[in-house]
Image (cartoon, rainbow, N blue to C red; front, side, top):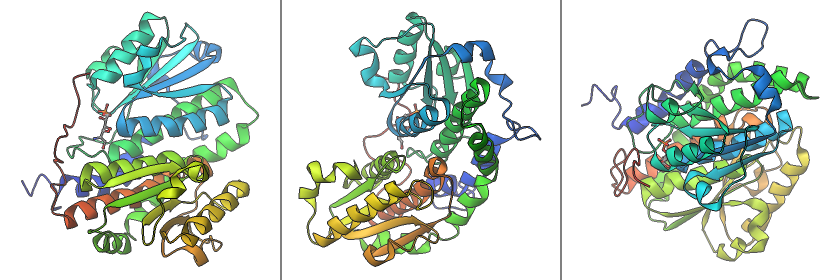
Length: 372
Ligand code: AGP
């Protein structure tokens, strides 16, 4: 009913709008006054976490994209080797796991069969499993050694939005906590990132307040057949997520690429007026990354692409090459997905509406996939 949707036309719109609160709720009570993380609820003793020598993340779909981003964060802040794998592929390749492996299973519903089978396999091999889950008491957390709940509240729309942002928050918490417990050379950075993370819901709010041009742009592209998405570093999984949203909602051919891979093949796809969304990393800090992507934008534009550039406030270098520019607030590099994903969700939702599609219940899809 309209009341259930809180006055929005679709649950998806309501859930996109709820993201600042979902993010804040997922942080609530997990950072103490001194700015340190307190995750006692996880129930894996610190001495066990200190012994971990490999992290393996398993998940499907959007949750898998959160896991891809987690890999960048975990390896950077903890120096523990981390791999992220599609849950449906995991157990069939006889993965190497033992008592010192921490497996992180990410799932909104907690009922996804592929993820459940992957975690069962991991536990049989003696690995410890930590679930990141949005549904209290569901099967995946019940069968795991420990759970860190996301507090997104019920997500009704099939396309995941607020659950994704809270999965990211939970992944950052796990990465930062591992860093905190083990003590790495990134101690100061961990401290300052925790501070920025605690403020991030305000930044998500700012993005939501500036989405009208994105909706307008989406409507203008309703007749297109293909949209490509490019990113580097954590912007790459964000590009994949933007493409997944567009596939499931707008039924358009959408693909995400690592921008550096363009020249190895995908650049052949670029033709006149093809919309290409580019997620641009911050020009501060890792400026090498930024310079590389600016030249990627130049390359595709020279070949006729219509560039839709998502870039940080104050990034002037992209301006000459952006046919459409979407501004997002400045954040630490690793946290950027929390703000960069939002315009892509709004874009997909509006395009689906413009094409007359059922936003909350896309064809052929179920909210949770309980078969392998
Ligand atoms: C996202 O928009 C999807 N509908 C889908 O990819 C989903 O994220 C995936 O099926 C995993 O679900 P889960 O988080 O409930 O395990």
